[in-house]
Amino acid sequence: MTELRSPTLHTAGLAGAEAAINAALRLSPHSAPALAALAGRVIALECTQPPVQVFINSNEQGALELRGVYEGDVATRVRGSAGDFAELARAEDPAAALLNGGIRLEGSSAALLDMQAVFAGVDIDWEAPLVDSLGDVAGHQLAQMLRGAFSWSQHANASLRRQLSEFAIEEARLTPPAAALEDFYREVGSLAQRGERLEKQLQKTRRRLRALQES
Image (cartoon, rainbow, N blue to C red; front, top):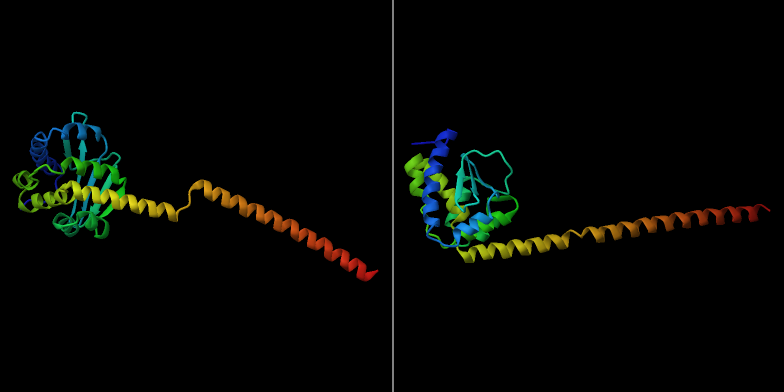
């Protein structure tokens, strides 16, 4: 059994998978320009238990790149346990599983959604090249992560976009825009000033009443 403990071995295994995936993507005419448009937007898939990471990127030529080690900025991070990724890969409604399951999205979801749209409808064997390079255990684990994150139909991708959009709208309703908050703070400040003026007037009135009573 091969375990993903060596970054060199990890990278060597990913190179085989990268070549096989790009060969499949070349059969889809729209894939290259779509991936070229995503160049530089790195997606991190992070399995927390057992700990494994893989970074997905595309270059300006429209080819997919898989890395085991990456130290730059990440546009989207998808984090969960091996069981979470397996559940996502098996889900009949992956959008619901992603939003309601143990998987956590960090950063912008746009890069992930756009990458999923590229893979939708493309028949990719995620497992064979990874198993050949890394062995049954590690190869299956990485393939499951990739399959869970990207083996989506166009319908599932559209469903997730809609649900995330609705969530963003609800969040926007719960969080007032900056202009509205500024207006509110101005009104509070103005009310406080009026209250201070009223308090001063009351104090003057009390002093006059005491003066009248003493005279």
